[in-house]
Image 1 (cartoon, helix red, strand yellow):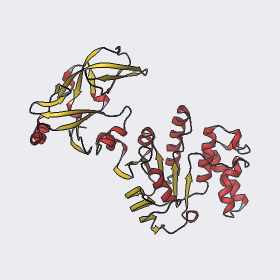
Image 2 (cartoon, helix red, strand yellow):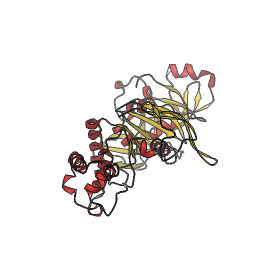
Image 3 (tube, helix red, strand yellow):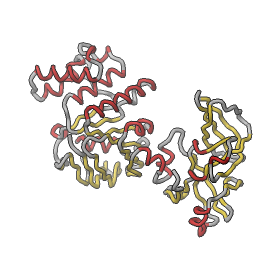
Image 4 (tube, one colour):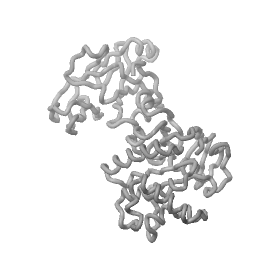
Length: 369
């Protein structure tokens, strides 16, 4: 096993820059997740680590060795693709052991290692089947087994769960985490699913338009996003964003006044009259709850647009009267409301964010997170 270090990596395709100024280091044995919207460059980074793409500029290290000019087959990394890429004419055992066979490993050793890996993935009873006889989840495990059996220094996974149904994806995600805890292989995982990123990662790298937006532990990024893009990408449902104008009395949100804590007022005082984006997560908005549990609250009157019962909780989508904007509010499952109802929402101002409306950069966040 080894650490992976990217230093000022850039990848250009003709006149298009796919990734730029990518620098981070994955310590030995950690599980890092690259996350971001489609086209943000996360798969390009993974393929560059694997050697399937060549960095235009920058340096790439695996362990202490710079591998820019080392071909993919010599980098001692194993990659699992989104489509699994199993050989249809081979059995499960042959698929798992094929890489070892190509390396001229002793057949008896191949058999032992294939069986051990298959048992760890609970597919040892499928070793004589062909891929077409397997479910999607079983094929995914075979692809993982083929990578694991090589005992690589680095494990690369490119959206390996995206083809699975929701329940199987949840189950396999938990198995992946357990597998990493057991093996301790340095892992870089690519996904656009923020739930996968939050639940699997030791550290998350959030990307957008080919650049790193933020690197950190999942809960830190969730609680302290660096900008509006990160704030709205991580979290389900996402953070609410409300355009507002700063006034001497607080924030004017579509004609309604949201009080402004004293420390926010002092910071923004030179910018009276300017517009900002206010951010607050759905779980920090309340309906008809006692105010004494929160030191600072603000209220806005809204109109219910859509009600989505989810069993234990209910997601209510509301809008400010006269506005097209929608806010998400999470409430208890016993909450009864209908489209068209008017509600008075309480906002926990201790969890308020202020973003620059033009750049999206975070200008302010209360320290109480």
